[in-house]
Image 1 (tube, rainbow, N blue to C red):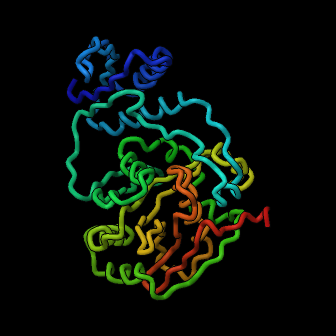
Image 2: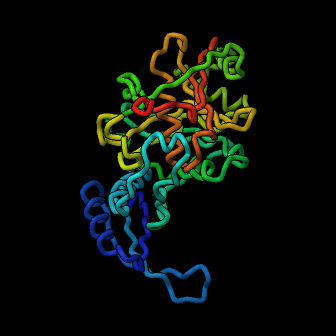
Image 3: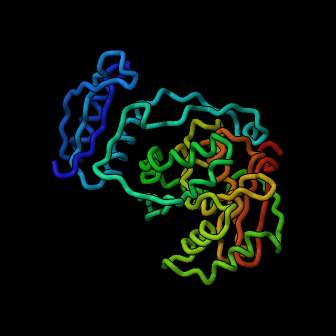
Length: 327
């Protein structure tokens, strides 16, 4: 093989046979591959060797292979338990509904090559309708709540990219169609994020205004943690999902800017070039923070939300959002 990517699948799992057959069939349809058994020494050095199936895939794009493996294994998850109603989530009457998918719990993926990264790690996600460059300031996750830090780091390997490609249920689109919540916005003219946005005007290293702003924030503001953060939710995660969204398709989105605010709250922000003219941006940002809370298990009162430009910031507390059907 010119570009071998390896996936080591332990043979001692209860679902090994079914997983092996389904995974090999799925990969064989898309790639040149082979599978063979191997014996590997265990870490503790005392037990006998670990028996594994090694699936070797020839591809110069390791992330494409990893995505194909994740998509197939995603279907083997246990049937999730239906979550509470949205109003209960907002009032923190819930537990995290499901254990998050982690590829390492199924096997070990060894790419044909590894990318180098420095203090800010970047990963380009091919999420329709284009590429989204997720950037994370690695050291700034040290003081975050552990579930949030774990989520941000795990995105590089465990984000279910297939959900973003097949679903048309995007937060921006849902917001334009309306969503059954009431949100009280506060308009600010002096928030720090406004000044940062204005300063970023002279920062011109890429063609996109959005991306220049995001890179400026990460490079010049220690409160900024990550940009273009992928988030998603599935229909079972809260019981009124089909009624409120009008579909059972997965909901997806990308958070423009994730910050640690001066008061310790986690700020979920969306940059809008004409913030004052926006009519649905607050709903879009609410959906972002809802998905982030579902993914991490953090309560809604841990967050501050808003959209902004170089003149204004419109903020709200997601824990104070009201579901219209409950009013």
